[in-house]
Picture 1 (tube, helix red, strand yellow):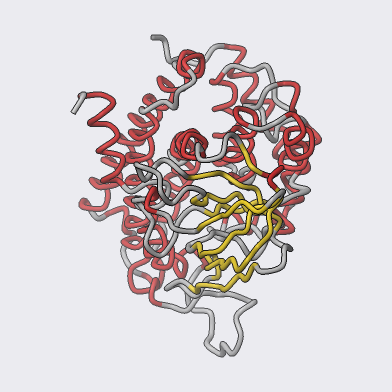
Picture 2: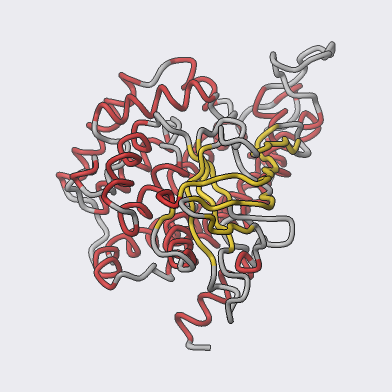
Length: 402
């Protein structure tokens, strides 16, 4: 397999790079470059620019806003967005729910939701994990009982990322509590977050951020028309969705950008100290991560090249578990290098103009104050979307027949 980019692909990369440079707002670019996540307004504005260009959902079918591109061209677009860095299209809409609706949704659901997902006119969040059902997702207990033309949903979801911004939620619920296997009797519903009976409670993480939430459902009425796929067969939708989510978690472009920036940072000497790049242990660790990242990039390209064959079989690609494990492990390793580079300046309070009651002087740069917060926050990466242990079980079964 020849993994070198063609002249056409290199020209496309230059086209993408030039368009991003001309269209990414300066305040969004600055915020992303500092290591912070975009605001909701920034995310919506940027995704609509991509949508108007026809680049928000290139991996979808052309009839729903996609592009007749190869998987490699889609990879190039994603890599350039991440490496700028600019906000990636909202994953819940574009990489998770959208492909599920294309594969399992009714024509009415596709016509109503897909354009709004691509343009971010509707912001979805993911209602999968529960207090007792995380990596073992099939043990979920949030229940939906059929009552005429509606389901009545009761239960709780947790770690619901960005639910405070969401207009809708896609939800796994148990519709047959007597099913013989845990994976059976689960259904996939789309729920309007404005429906009476839904309560969103913030969970403030160790870095002080409001990223995740608890979501409670008390006698929430959901139209049966919002069922995706077949009742009690929602696990098929979930497996399909998680395969797409795991492939996207490799985030090669984002890791390459962080490494590029780290090299520049490591040559600085804050406070007169010796630049950390002169530390042989740091250089050795940095080189090791770079080599592993190049190997991950090559593996990602091989998986993408095999994408059409996998889709024709109608099954998720188990190789996505490989990308998920290596991608998240490398992102965590890079966050450790940032902590090493920040040194004692990583203990300073973040220079956050939105923080209340802060009266300390700014003694460190943004990247330094964010280094430890990012390190702690990114411990979750090897857990969400299916923990590393679960991914190894999938690989053992798919590749080794165990």
